[in-house]
Structures are given as structure tokens and as C-alpha cells.
Image (cartoon, rainbow, N blue to C red; front, side, top):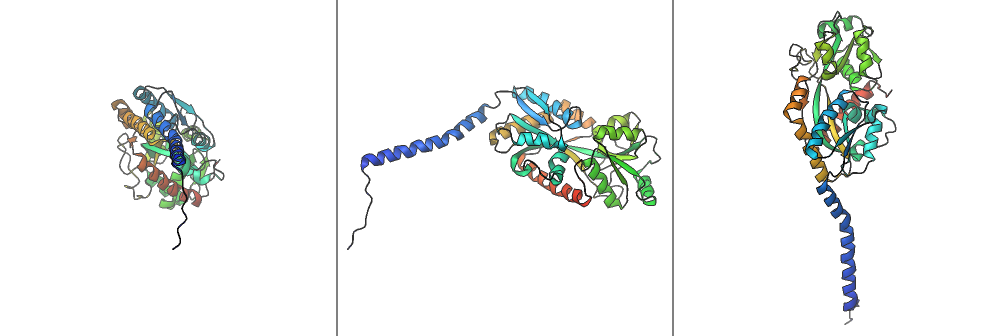
Length: 339
């Protein structure tokens, strides 16, 4: 009977091999251990939150209010870094390419996170792979507004005139492919009317021209137009939320007026670079959601008609994906392009 060949390893050599393997395992474990220690100690220095829009807008002012509360709870300064440009792409790309250590975060909105990825031909990052969702912070209702001197006193008035004069009524937006553009396009599709689009570079100049009578209507976030409504310069004809907005109780919803599919919101949320340790993501989530639930901030948001969401990371990711598909289909159907 043939004897099987066996490789013989001397005891001394076997001990050396075992020691080498143990050392390699220890080396491989070092990065994970160091990462865990870093996560446990976080934060040990100021935290930078990129807002991908110029200072003074609604996303910026919201993050500044949150940042002050987060600074108090985390014990480190939260610095707001405004990196506007390319409809939010520049700021998001900056965070996507930052170290995943919790010290660079992104606070952005519907347009930059769910619409722009469908319109930018050469996006320098992958929103689904390069950014880690933390929380959808807020849901912001939208109102259709006209000048206080406008002849339209209801949405039905407006739609009746649009049907009688196809393409003659013009509407303003903050730019092609923005929520202010696509929301009116959705209304046009569902109401079967034709109105002319007049894009601007931002909501402020668009509202200025509505006040001056150069354009006739606009859909915009309620907090943006609320001061003008309170001041008697604009009037809201309809809100696009599922239920009436408490700060505009007299204004009907699109569903009440027979347009249930025209239910749209803007929303703001926090994200981190992909690969950020789960423990740090959890800490950021906790800091943001605790701030959102503080009585003074809740009161401020309520006065603006804004709803606190404070979703979990595992909820926010699928939500962004669904919103991207929804707005992308509409943007492509109307031929929207980035300005």
C-alpha cells in the first residue's frame, strides 16, 4: 500500500508561522480599532456643515438655527460653510470627497439631492454611493402665489383663464430644473393647461418681478413667501400639501380643488460622506433630531408652516431614491436643463 506524502513542519517553524499570522491579524485590526476609538471620541474639533447655496436662503437659515443647537449639545462649534454653485453640485461634491470622519457634513434640499442628479450630464460624484443619508430634517409645504393686485383670487380663476388663453399666462421659477419650476409643470400636467415658463437665477429676483407685475405667478416654499403674504404684497391661491397649512388656514389644498396628484413638498436633510462610521452617523443623527425637537425651534418651524420629520438614516436613503425617480421622470418629460 502506498504511503501518502505529507508535508512535515518542524515545531519551531510552526510556532513562527502562528506568531506571524497573529501579527498580521493584529495589523489588519488596527485601522478598525483606531476607527472605533475615533468614533467613540467624536467630536474633538469643530464640525463643518456645507450648505450648497449662498448665505441667506431658507436652507442656510435653517442650518444656522440647527447649528447653534448642535454646538451646544456636542460641545464643539458647528461651522456653516456656504459653497453655492451648479445648483448644489459643488457643495455636495465637496462633502462626497471629504474624509468620512464626521467633520464634514452636507445639509441640502430636494433640488440638489433628487432633481440635479437627473439633469447634470457629468455629475462628479454618485449621490447613491458617495453620500451617507443621516436624516430628513424637515418637510416644507409649497404655495402658489400671485401679486396682491392680481385679478386671480382662486386657483380655479387662474386655471379657467389658462384654458381660455393657452400659453399666455407666464410663471416664474428660481431656475430651470428647480422645484419651483417642476412643481408648476406638475400642476400644468394634472390640470391640463399651458403656461409659459420664465426662469430666474434664484427665488428672490423671481418674487421681485411678481411683486412688480412682470410675471403672474410662482410656486415657492411657504417660509420664503410668508413674509410677503403677511405684509399684504402676495396672496396664496393654493397649497400643495396633503392638509391645510396651519399658518395659511384659509388657503385650500390642491386635493380639495380636485388635483390630488399635485401634492409636493420641498425637504431638507443631513448627509455625510459614504464610509462614515455608523457610531458617528448615529451621533450626528442624535444631535440633529434633538435640536429639531427643542421647543423654541419647533415653535419657529411651526410659525413658518414647516413640519419636523427627523427620520432615521435607513428611512432617509430610500426616500431620496424614490424622490430622485419621481422628479427625474417629470424633469425629463418637460425637457428641464440646468441653467
